[in-house]
Length: 256
Image (tube, rainbow, N blue to C red; front, side, top):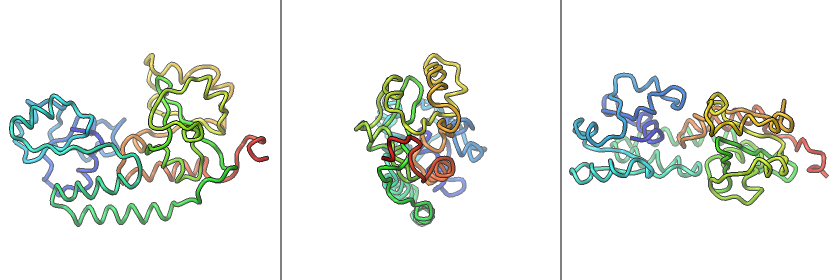
């Protein structure tokens, strides 16, 4: 019933073990595993449609529709909830727990071992004071700080994270003026949001972003690798390191 747990379940489950995944998991613009949903029933998080499938186990996220979760439990269905991953340790734990719930401990262990090996191969030295600073800026001016998956991805790529530099914790709004005054080396925007014509994304097309963060100072990322904490998340680290990892700040004053 949840995009992130759907993808972990598809990585862990045995063939034929999954009955249904959410409609988001089948959308190629938000899911990295949309092709793997072929042959599965697609649900929209409604208790009626899930109950009719007669599942032994329902897997949801802690922010999944509460009415559906509560109704399914009242109907005697087992529902297990997963909190969003806020770091690589959470990814490992969620994969391990999924393996336990699905009776696929060995497959989960293989995924975790492969994740650890890839993370070790990608490992960068902890960012130093002269490392470039990256600030993310999303729809409705949202950004993140410490204690988030994004922050860990940025650090693993050898960069400093503006949210952490500003002592932000979790997710919050960052006024455009504050972003400009902070003047990070790079601004990270989401490819999917840039193509969205909604009011929420108008801020991403503000002229000051082009004026201050044009050319090499603007990075765009595939949000599918960042939004969910799964073993596939390490691709975000690899791509970010290839674009902006290592080196020193682009701003002369930061290198004094």
